[in-house]
Image (cartoon, rainbow, N blue to C red; front, top):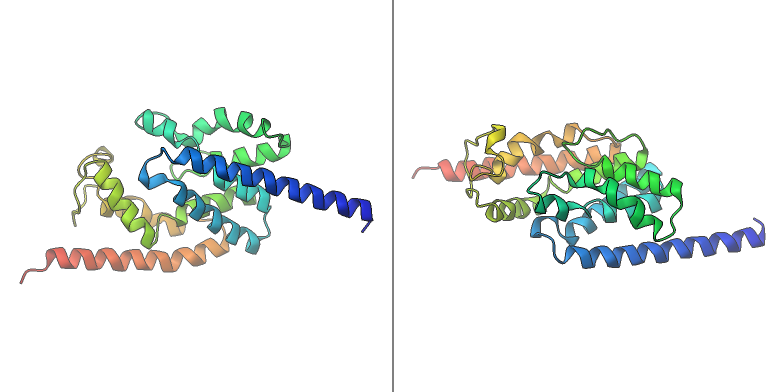
Length: 228
């Protein structure tokens, strides 16, 4: 490799790492005012999981890290609107200016925006790039494991839902009501996640995480139904 080219590449890599480090600090500050179920810890888990998958799938690690760190940045707008605004959709208004102010290239910005816009489970946009598919997978995987259980019960508490019902009301009208329990969320949506993922590694991880969730709720229902 040409010495000047190699030196230029090293400088570029260091510059990008510094910019991503700055974004990480900004996002952590922003999330200090967010609700407990979508806090900075969730963002970090998604980021770490996405980077793990990206290394196996040979994806662009910089796009993965930036899009992962920013994927829930507009959620506070969604929460304030009581879900009338979709945080993934709202990102269209925030992403370009956020990244342009930090001197990211337009091609990079477009790939990050696409990944974030497509990451929602219920959103209409389909991930087309490998990086978008990985972000989608990583975000969904954070909903089907042990950590999700305490998040789900915390979410139910925040929205004044029942602790549990072994016969959940699965109608759409039950969402965000006292019937919107953790088990309802699992039955309606999360039990289907493993069949909606894109990457091979995510599907592998999802299989044993899904089995754990099934075992947990089977045990919970058994204990609640148990009559001495």
